[in-house]
Image (cartoon, rainbow, N blue to C red):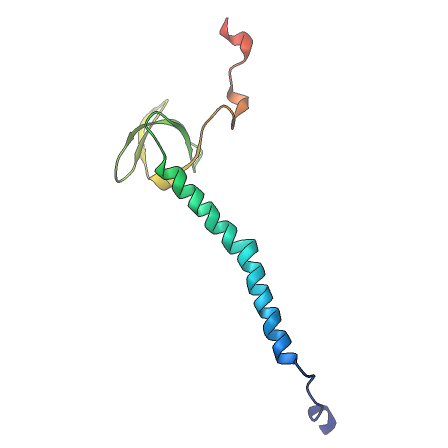
Length: 110
């Protein structure tokens, strides 16, 4: 029984473990942290480039047109009226390229 405790540790075991932990951290950085930071930067740039008259979709799925931009939020005009949202609630631009299903058909323009 005592011989189990007296066996020598393999050489370089601690160094190998440190290298593996370092590689795991680098992997997490490039697979998870960096893409998330890039996405946050794109969202911030999009929210800073919003203009009056632009058609947008909110994070809750509300579609509308930007009627007014203020310091504390954005007023969006919808079919039911005007609503005020935070800039962070605007998720994407509403364009015909993104939503081709809602594009009017060519024979509807008669």
